[in-house]
Amino acid sequence: MKLEDIQQAKLLDDRRRELAFKITLVRGNGLGVTIQGNYQDDEILDAVREHVVAVLESRIDAIDDDLRAIGVDVEKEPRGDGPAARLPILPRARKAIGSAETQVGREPLIYTAADMEAYGRKCHTAGRLSTLPPPGPYSKAQKAEDEAWAEYNAGRGGRPARAQP
Image 1 (cartoon, rainbow, N blue to C red):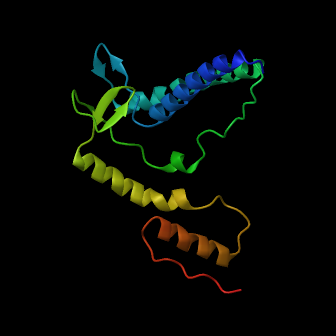
Image 2: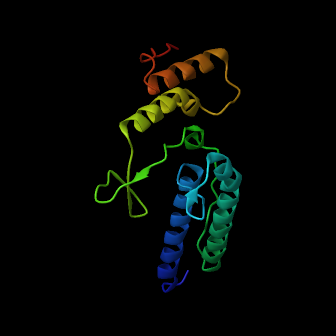
């Protein structure tokens, strides 16, 4: 890579990270569809969500091609199969002017206590699934130990005792 290409690579990387963040938002509750100013229901959102993700992913692929052209090694990461993909999505945020507990894209967002409590319960229920290791050739004892650690990490069980060799 040439020295003058470093700034171009940084700009492309910034755009790539922004698009990846938008994919995270779209897969969560960051997507809204309006028809003449009226927000549409979840059924319509689910119908367009994967198409929007596909467009954003194609834009990331184009940026990756540009990065490779200037000599940057770009590794592809598996999309949508990590532990975060199995956790519940955040409740729909309410836009608030002047108060910001969370900032997303420079728009202040707030959540009600009831929304966050329901989200916490969903995460607690889904936590066991997200903390389990990928399936593999485990013995029953290894699987039991992994499940005990998953329960401990999710806050639903005591600390497992170490097995003596």
